Amino acid sequence: MDISLQKQKAEELRALHHASTILVLPNVWDAVSARIVETAGAKAIATSSAAIAFAYGYPDGEHISRKEMLEAVARIARVVSLPVTADMEAGYADSQPEIEQLVHELIATGAVGLNLEDGIGNPGRLRPLELQLEKIRMIRETSHRARVPLVINARTDVYWSQIDESSARFAEAVRRGR
Image (cartoon, rainbow, N blue to C red; front, side):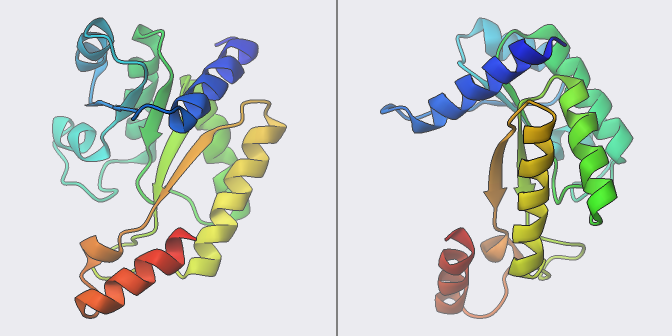
């Protein structure tokens, strides 16, 4: 994909997130569902990691390989003209070299954004906030160096993980959201 076009799509996706109207971001799992959503008039497309995993015969939760996930994202981005943001679960990477490689591979798919969760492994475990923030920083810096400023949607799995009591989960979600 043309880097200047991809950068333009990233800027478009970012602008949609900051628009005065609510961004409806339909989730897709393959090229056909992406084309249907585009034809229906969506302004951008998101992938669903769970739906892609299920379509490949895997359970949700990074059981599908990074390679297969990226291949699915590439097929989706290839058939639409809209900005595509990819649900990359917990990122399939932890070290700086792995994260940098992931960013370059994701950009190569044609995606211009990613969803990144802080849940790790079994439900109930969250990546320490400092490590999650470092991962987000590395993704942002690597994507800027690659000239495609990915839109990063950092999501917390505090409620999904069912840690502690409800009031403690709320406080932790707010802390992680800041």
